[in-house]
Image (cartoon, rainbow, N blue to C red; front, top):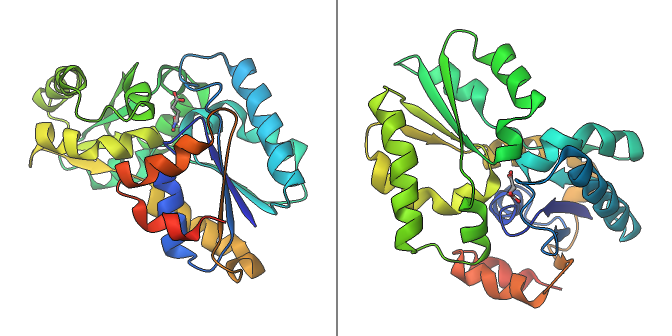
Length: 253
Ligand code: DGL
């Protein structure tokens, strides 16, 4: 079984890509809904949660873990790999590299949680892969919480999205990296603002391809999905259709 986790619903965007790439694999998805959001927490707090979730998923029989959360990857993927050297751990990092490679204007932006925006890991990623372009890092407090509450049509959120993204476009940004897995669910709102002025960069499919390369025999299961959450597990199943992921419901074991 492949374990996938996030602070909440955001990682479901990665799970959907994983299921598409590995339709017969068995998955356990864990949402840390008792502690969401991670974006305003310290590195030590996030590490503590990630290690506990890693132990939980290992105890459930998972043999590969996907950290479907940029914030948890930035803060704790190294600690998780050290704690579980017995299986592969795939992290999610903002798609700085493809954005920098494809940008024509030489200006890209990264939308992320406060924790990711201020992380050393993001700084290193920018240094390593975006030396030739100008990178604007935009922390987006509250966006993940709107997704958690399934308030995707909230006019206040739409206003905040516009207020943060329009100045980036005015500066000539032509690639906008979704640096938080929750933001995949805000793509329609973002596209309304961005139009043809920039492309959104989401790494979910790339993460799924990397997982596929490492999955080995885990690719050949019975296509079942377990849903776990640290609070209100019943909300996860109910959220799937609201997030246009209703096709995952028949897989739930
Ligand atoms: N989904 C997460 C990420 O990719 C974190 C959102 C949050 O809990 O703040 O960064």
